[in-house]
Image (cartoon, rainbow, N blue to C red; front, side, top):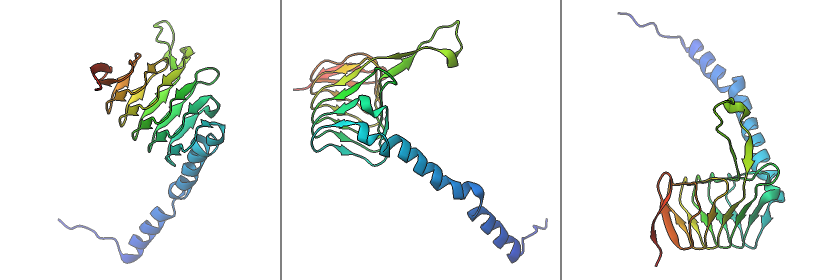
Length: 180
């Protein structure tokens, strides 16, 4: 079997075609647009306490309904998405979000007689107490309240309220023990 090899000119043309393709050239612009929309434009709308730390790639929606207390730390790739018209996200002082957490103050119905794309949005506040630790890639859904001092395990999906000083983990999250 004979394998045909491209000549040097053909290889150079393929490399240049890849490096200067429209998709490669547009990608940085897409990234800047996303970052600008989800971080830079939303950040001035946030209500921030003293010494709040936000990762540069954290994502916010409807920042005018997000309030972060003193010394809150928002890790890399965290998404805090408040509702469009009424759903707030309120976070107490000294709470820390691990990387990749997702918090939303809105969710959608599941009516069988309606198409998925036509489900009604429901907005409910998310309240996270002071001194909480939200583990990496945890999800906190609309209407949930986390009491002061909670620890939420990595990858947990919190669909119900968690009392103060509880440690909750799992999908869906359940209280596995109390701190102290």
